[in-house]
Length: 312
Image (tube, rainbow, N blue to C red; front, side, top):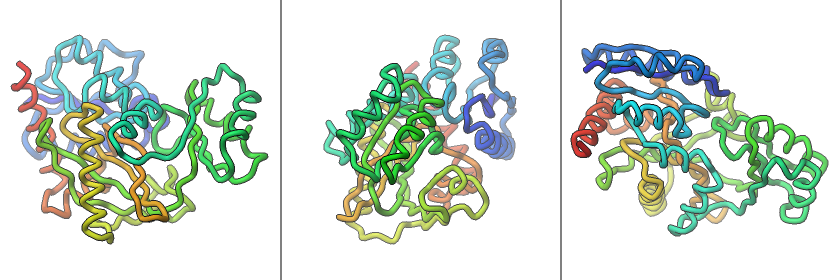
């Protein structure tokens, strides 16, 4: 197939996306595909509009990649692509909306409130003090890789945390801090036939799973499969598939949880375009069941082609 890989982009996750794109391009070439690599920018949309390819593999992360915007453009151009469509991408990126969907389906979430930046930092801080007691988390409603996130441990940090979050988004999410073990569950498959791959436990070297822990060499340790009991494993895998399905995701996603001090999984978010470097979490889990990185990328291509045939 002739496949275009979109990578790079303009979000705060650009560097990660460059690595993701490099890995995807190499894997596709190893399988004999003709690959066109595009360092995507919203200022150069003609590169997308003029594309003549069989499929687009989106290796972008964050805004303009994971939020449904590029998917919308590709839909209008009638170019098939790997992964979730416009609505699922937008819902997963909007943490507040996603949490409402999770809760309505019986998946445990952390208590949270969202605030429009138009209210002003002072008014937001006043309301936060009424409803939350440190420690709690302040973060942009639509951003990835923990960019703009602060764990507020003392009252005087609130305003600074809000100022940081508002640099990344016009809506701020404040949620209770859930202490526990970081877990993630990759999901893959045709719609209605998804399977969950082995659960991964993430042990960050820093205090929490921040940007450096995610992407710097040695920043975190991945334990695959996670050392938890079978009942908890099955529950998380089932809830990961349910979250993926209820958002309307396609082909693949990765669902993040924290196991709280009561040994219950609390869902954090669904990543519709998770990091896909050869050492990322999703490929680590796939390797546990015998799928190489190249095989995994090829599976995404085959699933996308099969979903496309189904809708034609």
